[in-house]
Amino acid sequence: MKLFMKNLIAMAWISLTILLVVCGYKIGRSMGIASTRSEAEKLEKELSGKVQKYDGLIAKEEGKLFKKYPKLKVYLQGENQVNDEYIISFTVNQNWDNVNQHEIKVKMNNERFFEVRPDFDIYFLNEDGFITGEYRENWIINKIKHGETRMANGKVIFRFGEPSYYFVQFSN
Image 1 (cartoon, rainbow, N blue to C red):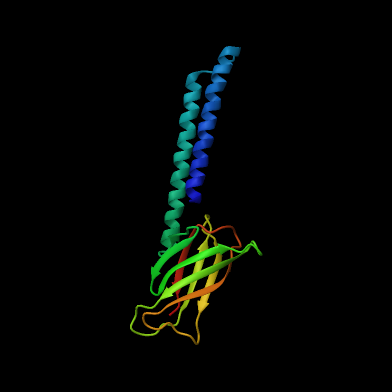
Image 2: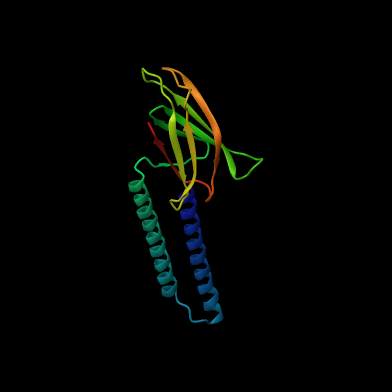
């Protein structure tokens, strides 16, 4: 979503620049300033080329992230569907008492024919690919029985901005 917003802002900036150049061209012509339509068109091509280059860099960098973290998924505000091993989904809610500390709820379900001891980490990455937060769950005594659904609650702190991606790493 942040990537979409950045692209939207970039396109709006280019459109505004083109509009200003065209208006400047018309005003310049009425004032006798030497400004031509070909200059405006040249600037438009240059700016659109830069946007295409920017989009290419973003795609290239995202490709590197997905190679480094093969299980990387895009983080969504609200519920994130994991559907991996025994984790169904998780939700991160803003904690209004402490802006930096967020509440996380992980929904787990055991469809295996044996009991499971949850032991996993959820890593959150910001838009630049830095790990901004992590959540650890390790059950030492309790287990999830076959067919049972359980919730785990905890806290997560995003140190380097809001997350854009996440991945889950299982320890067992």
